Length: 315
Image 1: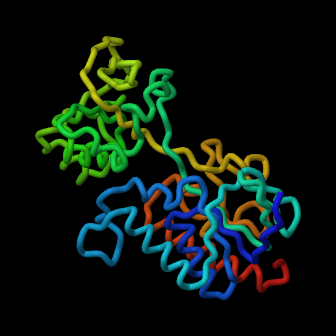
Image 2: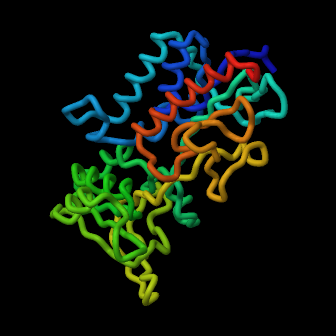
Image 3: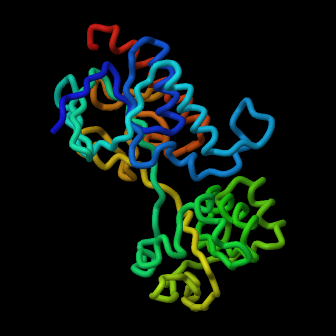
């Protein structure tokens, strides 16, 4: 194992929360180290048109916004390292962390902004065709479905946004939802229902994904009505799963207070966790708002609270 890398504040995650925390911590002269995690840029890297981030009158792209945040964090003094933590010891300070590259990190304070990751259906056939017609990222893979038929699974903002984005390429987009109404914002729902390329199948779920084995490719899906149990076969060249996200908090289980859903619990109106000197910000702790702007705000809060903590007797 390589030499230990120590910092006053270590930030885990490189989404809006992590980068904002890094910017504020750098400006407080705390010399933060930020570890990007397995998905640099977080969920924003699979977000296409961003219309609701303050300061931009024109539509911007999620990946571009994250690149701007990264550059800003580096410019003010953040040390950014491409690495992913797999084990932590929060029992004593300085905290120690081990990465999948077998590097050892230690820190006087820790900001957890590891975000959330896509949730999958859990079908055997889904795993079989993952990367070969099954995806959780329309931005990444939509281009490959030009003039083809695709299916999107889900009923929230992400599912509707993915469906709308895929109309730029696909000849037909089918949204499959297991309920009889969507949870997405009304303005997004209107765009969806008004779009001539999009068809919605209610009260249904995907039972199986079918296709060729060599080379692997999706050709159709079996859809089951959850109320009648009726099954139908639907032609599909691609399946995009957009059924939500799971917070990336697994390594903190039994080390911090966490909800049944896996979200790290923080004190009211604070980013403080159940462990002194450990703070959480963004989607890893937020199961309500889950917006880039709120994640950024929480990153700011975490950095300010770290600054106060390190200058106090506890720090």
